[in-house]
Image (cartoon, rainbow, N blue to C red; front, side, top):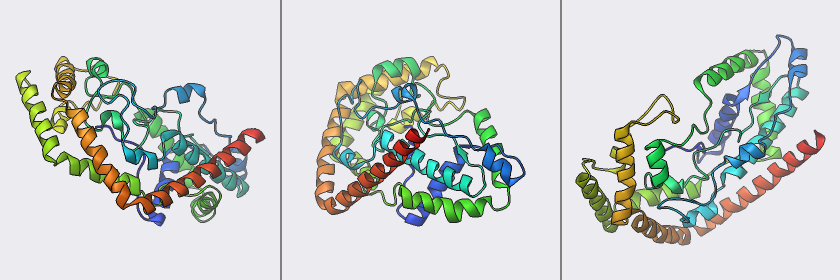
Length: 318
């Protein structure tokens, strides 16, 4: 299944460092050797436009076997647009701080390339591939490259990053002044991730429940009847890893297995069964962890409010 770009951590210090690394890896770096060149070289980030946003994942699955499905824990998760706003607001604060200190930091804005999923649940592919049209067109791969730059773009960004951060005092300014300023002005994404942790537990736990195990066994038998000897969902998808990229033309064998995968899930009712089982499981999880989940939800709401205030001031100033 595709990965998401929402890396979680339970420790605040580790989360801050991870976010700093994410920001650094997503920047465009170009710098002169002198400090004045850094100050003059800063350019205002171009935030995602309407075209970018149109390609973003939707909060609800619109097609396939998972259409309309939404698990209870999703109510406690930040959606992709909110995460993008927080990341961009933090970068704006850091850029303005670095410019004030005489350094260049021109972040590549978040949200200009679509993510694989709306949130950490990744409902469309939570139980493997579920859209027959996408299976027929792309096999097990995503319809497009998501979330990551091309190898050429990534190499260029890393080269610019090396050039920028090699300037004396840059790391100290970023780590000791500007990241703390972003933390204070906007806040920190995912200092904890109770909802994400519980969602990972629920998927693993419900996979082992008898009703889901019977569904998986029936799916495997159905696949065997169509000429595919596969023991698990991961076994099916894992046979067709394509390092050349998600946009590459799939093999006929991959398309055949992917379309049969979805067809067998529909025949045996696997997605509906697993979804019903996991929904019940998550309702119990929420009852047991409501205080933690509500606290996290309140933190996230405040975070997004502060981020959007920063973005509003930034847009007005431009």
